[in-house]
Amino acid sequence: MQTLIQKFSIIKSTPKEILLFDSALAAEDIAYMLGGQWDGCNGVVVDKRDRIAVDTAASLVGATWCYGGVSSAFLKPLNVDQFKKRYAAGERNFVNANLRGAALVQVNLSAINLSWAKLNLADLSGANLSKADLISADLQEANLSGTDLTGANLSMADLRGANLLDAKLELACLRGAKLPNNYQI
Image (cartoon, rainbow, N blue to C red; front, side, top):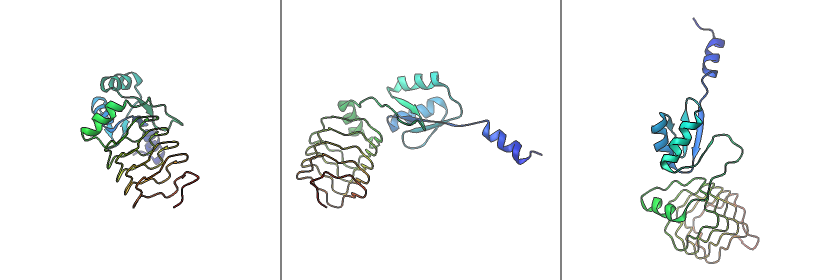
């Protein structure tokens, strides 16, 4: 009969690795390829670290990745045309997407999840971001003039320096958001 300490050492000796990818679709495909468990978002849990296997799988699907728990991850900028195609194909989860400086004028991105996305300096003028999740998104210096943010969740988003002229913010959640100096709620 195993003691509690023996059981703990067995559990401790088989650590799980968490891998984070730049898209949910890539994570789902890579979880299948590596025999891991997809978290329904952009993460994959695997039994052991095999960087060569992960790099190979990521290159097959054109994804970038990092290990969970890293202090900062560099994600290459997302190609705007690919981003639009993925959205048009039904993908809505773009957590941590790097769209810094992207030109997304008058695009329909309703109900998209751009939580923790890098959208600073992006031009989203006239875009439809109604019911979008923009939790903790970096929207510093972004052009949001005329953007429909009706029902969007902008909790903890950084909007400092953003242009919100004529933006529709009805029913938007701005709890904890960093707002431009000239913006009044």
